[in-house]
Amino acid sequence: MRIAPPEIVDEECYAAGSEGPPAAGKSFSRVAVRQVEWSASRAADLRYEEAVFAAVGLRRTVWQGVRLLDARLKACDLSNADWQHAHLQRVEFEACNLTGINLANAQWNHVRCESSKLLLVAFAHAKFTATAFRACHLEQADFTGADLREVVFADCNLRQARVFGARLQGADLRGCDLTGLVATAHDLRGAIVEARQLVDLAPMLGVIVK
Image (cartoon, helix red, strand yellow):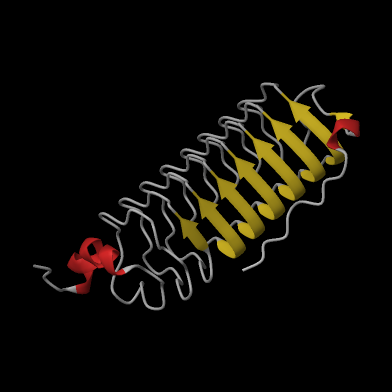
């Protein structure tokens, strides 16, 4: 699966975007936001296009419906934020903390998420297209009803994650810790796993491994 990278060119020339938390309805293009604290800010209908966020504090932000187009986030803290209905296209997360974020009904299109914490994330009914999680902590993440077809989970921790009603056809779970995964055998139809992972999946498949 090919994931298109963000179309970001010469970010050192981008305008500084750190004058303060964004106001509702604002649209920003070719900006770089670095080492600022915007925690608990609230704004609706935000749009960032060709944007770089580095070490930005976004804890408990309420940015419902935010749109990120061609964006890169590195070492940012989005824990316990509320980004329901977010739309992300050609976005990269690296070493970010998204623990407890609400991304229900979000749309992820051509997104990479690497070496990040996503514990207890709410992904209910989210749709993922051309998306990959690599070396991420997804313990107890809630993917109820999400569209995860063809999503790649490489070397991720999915302990006790919930995938009830999710669409997993072609989802690649190889190399992941699936201990305590909350799902039914029907939910897992079409998912790609390794033989050794069947031990973790045995309880929901109704088989006994000896």
